[in-house]
Length: 320
Ligand SMILES: NC(=O)c1ccc[n+]([C@@H]2O[C@H](COP(=O)([O-])OP(=O)(O)OC[C@H]3O[C@@H](n4cnc5c(N)ncnc54)[C@H](O)[C@@H]3O)[C@@H](O)[C@H]2O)c1
Ligand SMILES: O=P(O)(O)OC[C@H](O)CO
Image: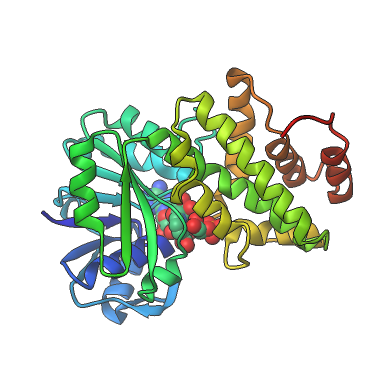
């Protein structure tokens, strides 16, 4: 069996480095100049500048060559996944397609596994998600993630194939739970960053994390997910990491909002589009997501941080 990573951003490069320490891996970049640069310098200076590539990583911009592997890790942003798959759906037929992105598609309300199932129905769709920064994985620091695949046999195979010495994978067949946890933790990280940026305190952050987790559970269970998935790495685990670290881009966007500073729009921040997509989805699900709604308003700048805090604090009192 062979593995290719499609997408040479920070996360794709980190996964290729981790896997490449013990097996041959192909890393595909869509930009031929970038592929040539990484192949020659043995480092991705644009996205992961301090992490050299092991010898076993082959870098290419040849799409067909990369798609020769049976297992393909799709490391492109959530809102680009469909267009990426639609470029050449035949190339993906019969493959193990492991989405490595987190979020909900704006146009459909689907998560990454749902998008793969729609565009390439005869592939085995899986999701790799959970608490991890690309730089940590690339440095070989200890990390644990969730590998979600509805097909238990394929899930077991992928768990064994993608676990490395420092990257331990747990498996689940609950793809919905894994999708929802990974998507919503980014939304709440924006909220937590805003609270810290506006100097509203660590207690307020803890409240947002806890009530955000309640929103996450509410949405996931309404969609048929299992509670234990949300309590695992893909839900609680990633919420804890992303809401507490300035290394997170979602948290950093929130920090900028809280401080009234600008933020580079070219940086991948999945939580912004996902918050909008989730609010659209709640209309059909019929559930209340007040923190998610507040994040949309903060991003739109239709609400100040002070008004957002006042609005959340004055909601009708209820049981926990
Ligand atoms: N960076 C992390 O620490 C980290 C950790 C875990 C999960 N993730 C997830 O991984 C996903 C990707 O994040 P990232 O950090 O690698 O982002 P990034 O911005 O570093 O890289 C995104 C890559 O996708 C490529 N890309 C974009 N559109 C494309 C298209 N249509 N076709 C082919 N390639 C395309 C870009 O060229 C770029 O190389 C996100 O969903 C993110 O949440 C990231
Ligand atoms: O930098 P972020 O906010 O996209 O977070 C990276 C990972 O998703 C953390 O698990």
